[in-house]
Image (tube, rainbow, N blue to C red; front, side):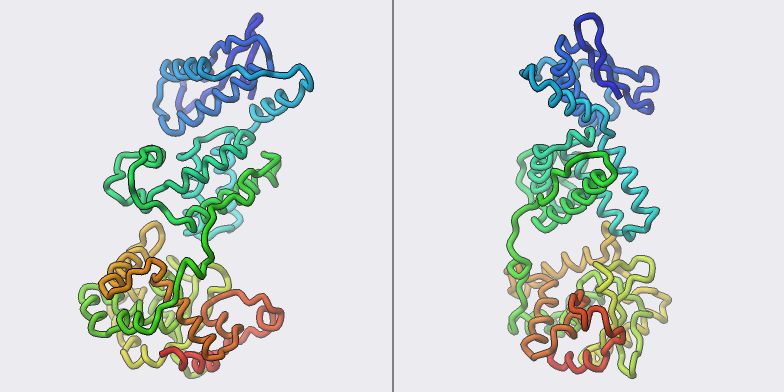
Length: 430
């Protein structure tokens, strides 16, 4: 696409507009009041970036308003000083940008290819689309080659200012994400871990663009927000924490309305499983293997998603759960025709653990545990710490919690699940 044309001695912006937005006039033409071709390319590329950004946020803007905005942007953009030699650098860069497809167009190709190849599961696809949506909302659409180091830094900065649960909080209703980020208001932002997760997904997108020859460089490579270690981010529970959190009377009071409030903390303590893995358990995930009652953590059924392939596992049930009649609860769900063990959990953005996570935060505070580094995930840390202190082999612990084992002996060889060894190890979990 040519962004400039020459009429007489002056260059003009010559931009083809999206037909679905401007069916009657498909070209915007505006004098740049510039005689030098390289300077005109610079100004035109800048105007196109700002115009794409504006249309991504205000797609109903009429042509007259758009032309007026371009005139304002042209007049406020300083004319660059172009050296006479070497002549090619700026012109090649601007020409490269002008010929580059937009990030939005490439994102559609990226998503379509990922879906065709089965690259992501449903939840992962939604997370990739969410990250791409953040990209366009926070820095706008633009030619792919125009996304440079400055844009990458701007994206990271604005992502770090995004509010938690933007689409769910009533105070943000009717506002765009960019409006909230630019407002300077006080609110709880997403965590650094969440920012880095989204940056990783966008880095993968830019890597795809680079591999396919749409860009020559990926400015997001290595871009992340500095955080503490995972060990610092989450603490294990102390014994007094566990005594308070797993008090049966307290849990029964909490579970009067929702039975999962009783079972999830007990399951978290005795399995070390992730919250989402427990929330999505189905009644047929409770099985018997080698004469031992077990649970199967899998992603073979609709609505089940795991972090990675290593997360698929079978784990013996702790005898304490059997004594507390967990299997009777599962059977009662089966009798009612429910597929899931906790059928009243509803997914929020594809996550069944949303409500339990919120509830557990309130519950632990009520029980006197206020350290923000102690969350439901702390059950997992505590489980691993207890097994290591008891001298259980790391290879067995990794199998029990669904961690990848990189050793050749245990990671590649041996496919039989050591159920009896796991059951013996669970004796160390009080």
